[in-house]
Image 1 (cartoon, one colour):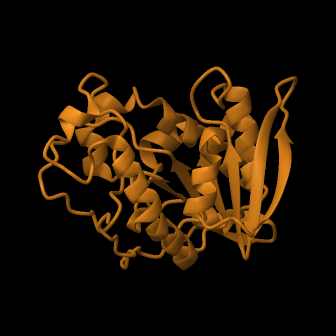
Image 2 (image 1 turned 90 degrees about the horizontal axis):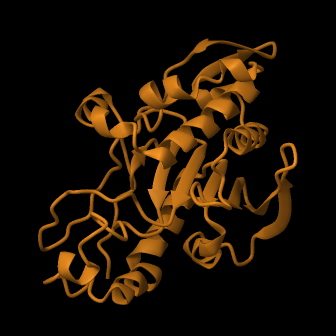
Image 3 (image 1 turned 30 degrees about the horizontal axis):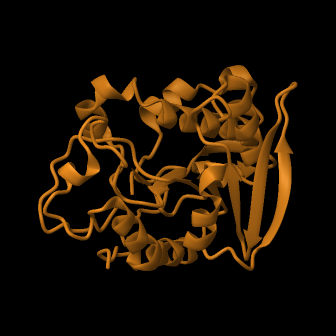
Length: 261
């Protein structure tokens, strides 16, 4: 899990996390709670945060959703401030996780087989992917979603639709296709609904066919905002107007992760 608040109404699920330089030691142990982007995290990664384009695009989506909910103009949707101060906060409005817990490439240069040499559960890569799909990882994602019941889960990348469906047990969920069409741009969305949660499988936040332009990101944020209200951003609502912040519930009890098996 990359971080944020699992009690939040909006979750973002990608295929795998961004590359990192953290040294992995055997035996691998699960992290039992997501890391929040608190002041210490931001200070430690301030020089790198300007390069994290996917996270910046999520911040733009959430800033646009917040502006839509609060009836603000696009000029007031300050995604940079959202990125620098609010994204993935411990008691914030969103949560970021991944289908697979390890980055596909740690540094972009070293082969997978060399990075995880001596980790028999991870080599070859196909064995690791199968363990996630059929072992504890996908089951953990489904159980965590069932426990916290987010309003919306944004699944990034049509290429991974089958894995999203399997991970969140969407085989029997109601499904429909929608289009996101700001100006002359058209992007396809596959929307699943079950109980009180909606899953939106959308284009990735990278590549020539992805959600990368400001126009598309803002439009998607407005679409997301239609499913949210002021309380999802920690605001009280009175007479149709947001009147001030209220404390987020403290995320004290995270669902415990299981080791891959």
